[in-house]
Length: 250
Image 1: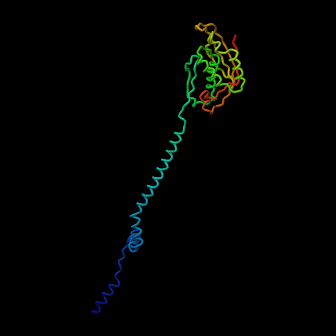
Image 2 (image 1 turned 90 degrees about the vertical axis):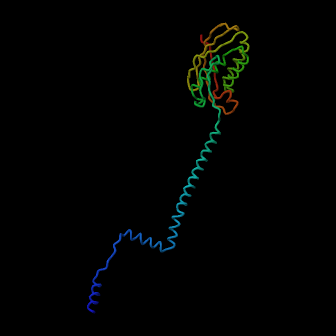
Image 3 (image 1 turned 180 degrees about the horizontal axis):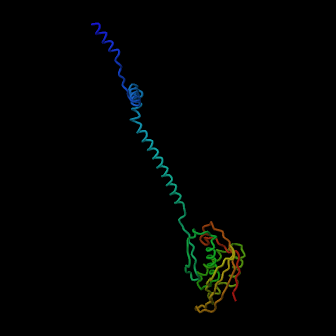
């Protein structure tokens, strides 16, 4: 009986212990889960993150989107106000021949007042108004007004043109004859000086051609864009004649 018991004890001592080998990662995660379950604070934090974390993130995204939409709306409103404050009137430059027919036109805001084409067009019309004589008193008065609207105040051109109208008034000439002006060419001799060549056809009151004369002249101009509404209407480009001289070509 004793021998059997001793043999069983020896057998129990000599039997090796069984060890359960688990992966390190599974063992670590298992310990963390057990620790979280064991700590009420960690469990509450995990529950908070799972329940309210997505809500907080979505609220933050919505706030960012709302601020972005507000910024875009303010930018669009500012742009609309800037567009509304711009002038709606678009000026046009129209060149007319001696009969009042349009021969060229274009938007004035697409060129600068110093554009050589605009200077030539202004002189084209100015010389035609200066030398034309018509029996229509209203048309003659308007032509004279346009001539003076393009003369620099106090300049030699103002004196020369004044003497021309006083010595040979168009209203008196129109009692016996009329003058049609056909400007042939306008040449730029410098940035501010131009030479103009034109033909004048003299007609009787009945319309018969009495003579045809060739003329040429030299004209000096200055550019001063107007800011007053009244000046803009009569001389929108601000081109003024400062000096004139002309003579008949023999």
